[in-house]
Structure formats: structure tokens, C-alpha cells
Image (cartoon, rainbow, N blue to C red; front, side, top):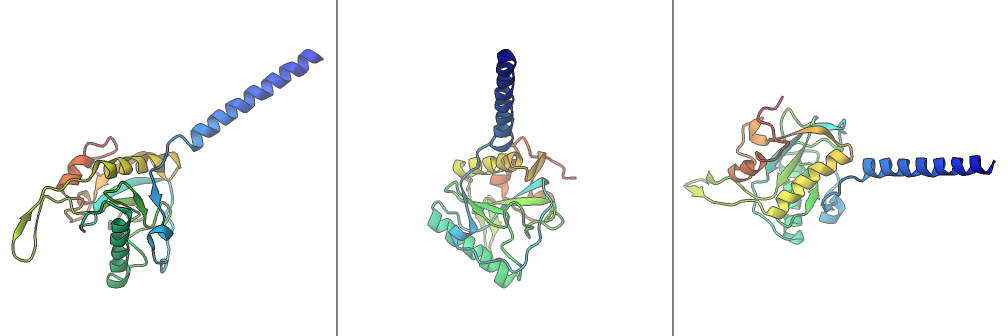
Length: 211
């Protein structure tokens, strides 16, 4: 009788350890980057919301075509201005991007994982967008002259983007076979800029053809 009780106890302990091991691997396999929530950067409440069906197949990479930022205060100001432009001028329901990443390496929550954004025509219902704060096109024309620049995203922002994608996969918001594409691949735009797009093309999830 004692032997049977001891065997049962060993079995229960082993089963519990196995369950905890599987649970910890399923739930917290990947650490997420530092995500600045909407309330932290001072977002306005959305006017209307549509929810995404997750997990999603696509991540679209953009740049914001704004000045860069390298601190919380400067990045938060830019993100607030982007939301103001999207909602007041373009008459959108909210800021268009799912997430924005500053040169400080922080991720700024836009519409987030679950709410539909307004970032890439034809892909808003089946993707999230990650927009790097700044302009990473090596040349552009203003009203009078061609301007050449050599701006590249910071390593901190690139690492944050990679971690965000892994975070999305580990938490079930993105598919394990998620496809990363530049906005220019599916719409008429220079975004995310030559300098950033060159880096994105080296990522393992990047795909040359979006289907």
C-alpha cells in the first residue's frame, strides 16, 4: 500500500512538472520589447474601432516620413502629432499605424495587436504595421530641389522591431510563418525608405512577393 501511494505521488509530481514546463514554454517563450502604451504617450480615444482576426499573416514595415526622435519626450510628441494629423486632417478613426518605433528603442502603441489600422490599402484587415519614426529614404524632392540624405535607423529601433515580431508570434497575434514586407511592395509609396528597406530585406521573415 505504501509503495503504491509513493508511486502515485511520484507520478503526480512528474505530471505537474511536465505541465508547468509546457505552460511556461507556450506562454512566455519570448520576451517582448518595451511597449509604451497609448495612455503613456497621451493618445486620444479612437472614434470607432474594428477588430482584427488573429493570428495575422503579414507585418508591413513603414517609416513615418517625419523627423527622427531619440528620447521618450520627443518620440511621444511626434506620435501625438501623427495621430492628430490622421484624425483631424485625414478624418480617420484613429492613428493609422499599429506600432511605431523611435530611435530610443521604445515601441509606441498605436492601434496595437487587435484593432484594425489604416496603414496599407488592401492589407489593413490582415496585417499589423510597424512604422519607424523618421525618414529613411536616401533622397527626396521638396518644392524646389532634390535633397540627398544618408539616414539609417538606429540599432536599438531595429532590435525592437525584431523583438516585437517575435513577441507577436509567441503571444499568438502573428502566425509562426508570418511574412514581413515593405509598404512599397504592395502600394505606391517610397516607404519605408531605401535605407530601412535594405535592412528589412535581410530579416528571415521578409518575403519578396506578397500573396
